[in-house]
Image 1 (cartoon, one colour):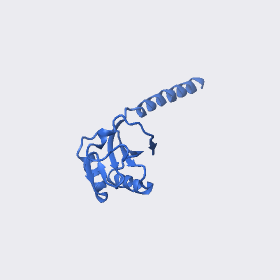
Image 2 (image 1 turned 90 degrees about the vertical axis):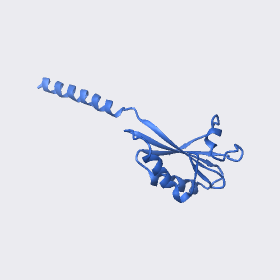
Image 3 (image 1 turned 60 degrees about the horizontal axis):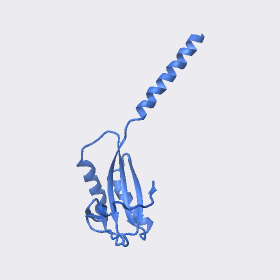
Image 4 (image 1 turned 180 degrees about the vertical axis):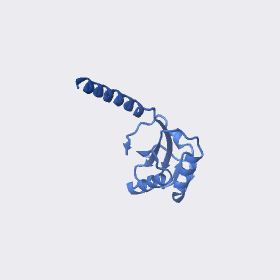
Amino acid sequence: MMKKIITIVVLVLISTKFIAQTNEQNETNFYINVFINESKDIRIESNLVKFENIDQKVKKIMYDRTFKLDENVTYRVFADKNLMLGYIMDVEQKMFDGYNQNARRERYLLDTVYLELDGPNWLKKLEGVKFDTIKG
């Protein structure tokens, strides 16, 4: 009887080790960068996009690239700090409407006028800038 109990305990310990290893797979991230200036102009990467076309642009980006198993998508939203939070959230929702599997967002509120951010090279201008993040 004692041998059976020891055998069961050993099998359970071994099986949990294998289960834990399968859950620790290397996950990669794919970033989609979005910029919203104080005038509510929206840029996905470097392309100017109308609000109503955000989901289609995101969908196109996601389906035009090479698929990777267990890849997470992170929407990095860089928005002017003076914008209404509701508008920023509406933009984020449109992105999730385009693609939402394994997706999350990071929101960065910036003083876009002070940093002189605008135009297609906005992401390059952000290099070296330190700012707080609100993750969700």
